[in-house]
Amino acid sequence: MQMKCWVCAVLALISLSSLWAVPPHDSSKTTPRGLERPVFAEEVKEEDIWTARMGDKTSSSNYRQLFIYTPEKLTNVEFHLGEAEGWEKLKAFSTPDQFAYGTENFLPSAPGQKFTVRGINQDGKRVTKLVTVESADGLKMSVKTIKVEDVKTIPVSTPVAPVATSRVLQLAQSNIGRTVGSGDCSALRGGQRLGTIGGGGAGIERLSPGNVLRLSPNSSLVGSMGRFNVSSMGHYIVVESVRPDGTITFLDQNWSGGSSAGRRVRRATANLRTLNGSATIYSGD
Image 1 (cartoon, rainbow, N blue to C red):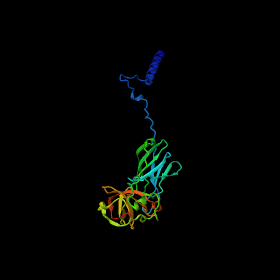
Image 2 (cartoon, helix red, strand yellow; image 1 turned 45 degrees about the horizontal axis):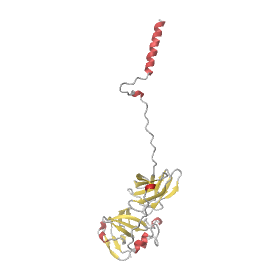
Image 3 (tube, rainbow, N blue to C red; image 1 turned 90 degrees about the vertical axis):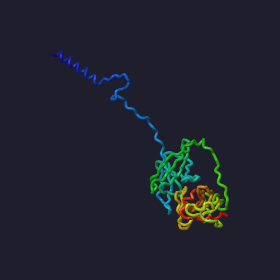
Image 4 (tube, rainbow, N blue to C red; image 1 turned 180 degrees about the horizontal axis):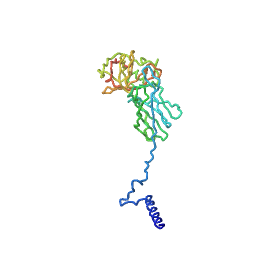
């Protein structure tokens, strides 16, 4: 009886140990599914993220300041509106846990407004990003990387300003970023009346670089500044270049709803085919 119990115990022990034995590989050299070792995805370093927002304060034209926040320090941080060619500096300021850069000027902030922002990071790369306003309050904005360049390979070139073709254009070009006279747009008004341009750009063939346009009161047009709405007083702009498709490069001041930030000469672009209203052409003499 004792012998029988001992045999049963041995058999039970053998049976139990077989449950914990690792099954042999089959001919396909695969490991049974239940015994596969967990596979961990290769760790990926998270990309440094820029964020953006428009400021809380607004001008009388509902323009706002642009702010960029980054996890790393940048140098030579610049921006331009839409398709404008010139770059303007962003001012650095401090926050508790990020590096931040902002504009002193108030800028168009309607949904769809685009800004191009660039800066040189600590690795010596100049990163360029497209920033787009997504919400009316300017708190929701998308940021997309469009270019990363090694600073050492970026060719150094001296920007060449278009040749001035009139007295007023020369005055405006030599004072970009500064105030002419009182800062009002009329400080850049023209001389002799030469003709008119109607809605949609009718009569644009009369326009030449160096001319001054007086946009009619309450008119509007679309360009690098978004949709620019003219006040009830009208607005003077100095034409720098004209393209066959109706796109012009121009200079003006007092372009930010009367705010002090806008009382400095800027360079911008617009398409006269989008003109809602009319404009009077004057010589730039």
